[in-house]
Length: 131
Image 1: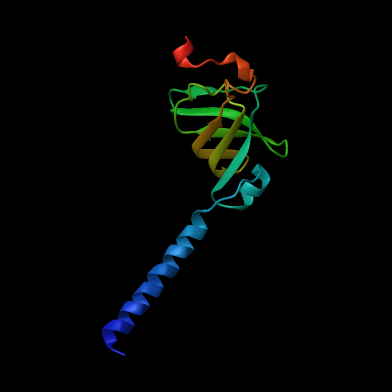
Image 2 (image 1 turned 90 degrees about the horizontal axis):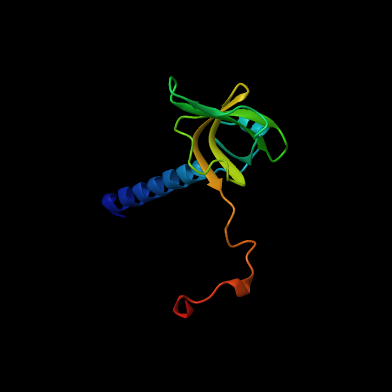
């Protein structure tokens, strides 16, 4: 075999291995706060714990709130952005970040808000041309 062909095959195998390794590291499954404390980055789904204080601090420029994970554990979450507009209406939250002590530091936050179509009767909607 020619040296260029061997070098090309080695480069392709190396690149593919590196790509698969990085892809495997980037996949994160949903977990609880307790399991997130044992890992680096984690996705924690849950609901806003509205029985505890929440708010945006102008000094630290962080939004803090408490969230209950799927196991029922409530933890303080620190989000480095302003409070999202539809935060109070969200049925479910997913925070992405890491635990440091008993506080979860979220880099990102996803919200699932209730659909306005869930409770509607199918017969209520009419075609736009009928209006």
